Length: 483
Image (cartoon, rainbow, N blue to C red; front, side, top):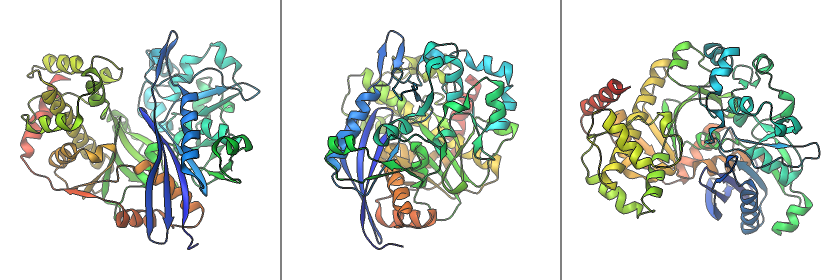
């Protein structure tokens, strides 16, 4: 293994912001600094909700300029969305946002050709209205799709613009509902029956594979001196975040928190049972042949939308008010697709509480406590269900991502799960991105080596469970009665 310290640029794009981070990796060292952060603001145009992908790319270029000399670049982002290119490699319109309404009612059309149970047995993907498969079915018959010669998922699209080389990274491809998690290849029969052209996708790449070098025009734009390689990382941000869970051993659950909460286990093989499908678990692919067995929970999106509706009040004051509010007075189902669309979130939470016969939270502090209690309850349910469905032992829950900074949410999750919680790192996706690049260049070893390095170098906060488990049982019973 090389003993030379190196610098890696991690482009990490979330649903509300993007950032370019610089990770410096050496013998026993791992440091992360922010080079540039920029807003990711979707735009509603007459045809629907779209991503400003050119603005994102400009933010990436600005970030690489600010990063300075680096030994490699890696890109991760949210999943499922894509750009379409014509035969000349030009983008055919702005990518559609996964919260766009175009996939409403599409699942029933899919299930008419491939029943839901059969689709799950073949792909291991939980039902979500925005899965790439549903987006492609919604797009069938459009001029844009008919004109497309190439489909690139968002991080692959940006990699293509940086390098001129096209590929489809596997961990992100596994969120499309078009990958067989057993073979780690395309589900050809499913695509054929749904008339989806897999030839639109570029060849599959694995984390650690080379993805080209920065084009001369990119070097000129950023001031970097070439050649600068681009390395394929776990380009689904959750795959990179799970790679950065600082766990010791295998008896852990993880919760990747941010706009979404992704709660589950790291397994050696997919779980494709009907019970798993009924419990809304998905089998996404991870590093080194692993499976990210997890449930998608609405996450801090609920609070983000409330804060936006309230005019962006001070978050610290809001969380202090939530900590002082009575706990578990009212809870909502944080997995309810009714919370997926933007807008009117405080009113929709109030309506859900009223509809289930619970007290309606009247103040921002009370609404915030309702949201955090509800998320902790959903985390509890996901961890318990994952253990039940797999028989996998769990001694500790690791919370990574932005929610690791939310001390109230972390403590409530420990209380709800009845398990110790280790919170951090908050920038897990960027760290996982950096570590896969460093591993590809020989600076770190296997996943266990990566995790030991994280545990030694990153600040972590420990929470012990407290309170009354019966109160969480009662809150769960209230939700179950309202479903």
